[in-house]
Image (tube, rainbow, N blue to C red):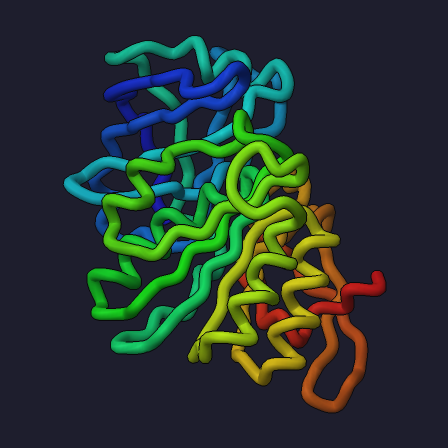
Length: 260
């Protein structure tokens, strides 16, 4: 893990409340893995006090790319930073996705869950995997970076709740249809918890090894505050609790206690 001041290379608003931020951070970019995150101080002083955890959307050539939604004072401040600005950064943090080579993979993203899966899709293709990427949102306006995704050499499947683009319905229903016609070696997902629970159930029924990236509020990012714990089950079925920031955010989908 590194603590540094990263220089803003570009800050682009790609939707009404969606931003893409490129940061020059060679020390972090060199070791970042898909599924990990960085912790940013989003302000000039100690207000807001807590850092903001953001998934690494992409990494390479000494730069990090972050994809995030403006939701409060912290991310609003971040969205106003311009090229040359400095952002206090910790990372890379957390446990990332398991990388494999030469396999057939399914990546399932719900809404902002696309953030860490873009990086995973690119690395997976570099490792010689065939990738089917399932991307869902409420409507067409909620879909972002489609051309960039297609440029990775993946097969892209789109779903929207209102049917304004692609399949009408939840992205997990679209993946379920493809599961009946295709065999996958591994599957990965990120998105709202109900969607992840449905994903995990489908993966288990199809005997597909699956991992999920959990979205939880984080305070310290080091596991000290215990503010982001989630319930898991071990190999004996015993329930225990793990910090999402240190034990995750990526977990075996079959180990997560989806009922709470």
